[in-house]
Image 1: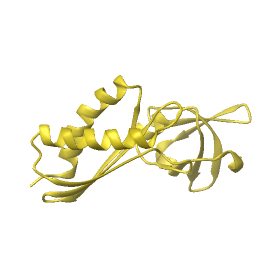
Image 2: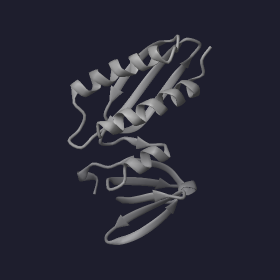
Image 3: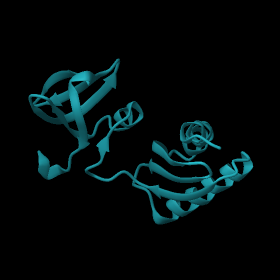
Length: 150
C-alpha cells in the first residue's frame, strides 16, 4: 500500500531538479487515491507558457520516474499549466506567483494587487504604489487575477 504524500515526496525530489534544468517551474504536484490506484496532477509553468508537447513529454517522464522508482501503482496522469484564475493554496504556489496579479480574500475584505513577495507567512502586496503586508493566517483564499479584474 502506498500513501499519496510518500508518492508526492518521491516525485517532487526528482521532478524539481529535472524541471529546473529545463527552466520549468514546478507549481504544484497533487497525488490523490489509495491502495495502488492514484491520480497525479502535475502543474508546471515556464516563460512563454507550457505547450501541448511539454505536457505530453512530462506525462511520459512522470510515468518513467514511477517505474524506475519501483512504485507498483496504477496512475492517471494529468500535466497542466496554471490557469489565469487559479486558486493558490501552498507556499510553493505563493512563491511562484511573485510579480503576478492576485486577489486575497480575508474575513473582512478583498485585496487586489501585485504580489511582490511571500515570506515568513506574510504576503507583500503592492496596491496603488502602496505596500500592504497581509499575514497568511488572515487569508481565506488567494487567486490569480486576470487583467480585467483590476
